Amino acid sequence: MKKTRKKQILQNYFNLAFDYHVGAVALWQNIVPSDFLFSPVVFLLRHSIELLLKALIINEAVSDVYLDSPNGIVIMHDGRKRRIDSIHSLIPLWTAYKELALSHKLILDFSDIEVNVLEDNFSYWDNIDENSTYYRYPYNKDGGANKVEPIGISLVEAVPAIGERIPYIICNDLDVRYIKKGERHLFKVKELFDAAELLFSRVEILIK
Image 1 (spheres, rainbow, N blue to C red):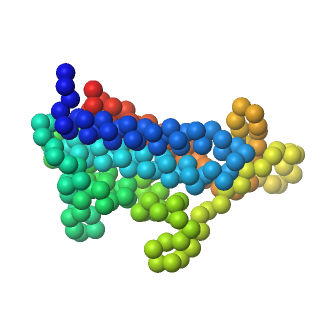
Image 2: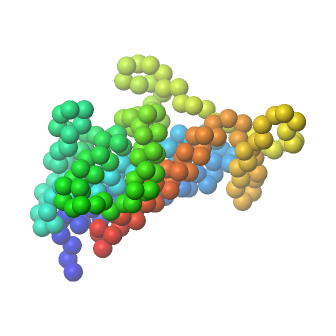
Image 3: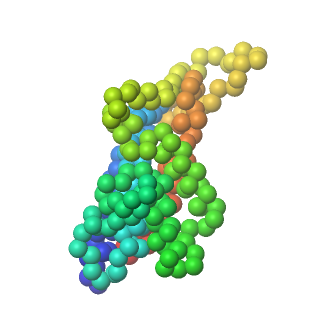
C-alpha cells in the first residue's frame, strides 16, 4: 500500500532520528575511557528525541490524507504561536503533543508511568539545555560561557579508603573504570536513552 504524504513525512522524521540515535549509541559505547565524548552524545541523543516529538505532533496536527509541509504546523510556546521547526525545547514540544492528542481522544498512547518518566527526563535536560545549544557551543547567545558540568572517568587503581564514598563503576568490553565526577549526568543520559526507545516504539507504530 502506498504511503500517504503524512506517513512519508513521519517516516523521514523517524529515519533521521534513528541516524542521530545510532550516532549517540556508537559514541556512548566508547565513553569509557573517552569521557570527552559526553557532550556529543547528549547533543545527538537530545536531537533524536526532538525529531521524534515533532513526528508525534505532526501525526496529531494534520489529517492522514494531506500534508503540504510540516514546517507550517504551529503550537503555543511562551504565550505565542510558533512554528514547530523553530522550537527546540523538549517540554513545550511534549506539552503540545499531549494537548493535541487529548483533544482527539480520551487517553494518551503512553501510560501514566511512562509520562512521568518522559517528563522527568525532558525537564532535567531542558533545565540544562533549553534551546539545544548548550552542548554545541562554548558560549551562549548572550556571550556567557556554557560551563558544561565536567565528568571524569579514571582507571580503578585501588579500593577506596574507609570513610570515602564507594566509587561508581563503569565499564565496556575492554576496560573497567570508576566515575570520579559527573555520575548523575551519566545516569541521566542512560535514562534519556530509555526515553528515546519509548518514543521510537510509538512513532514506529504510526509509520507501519
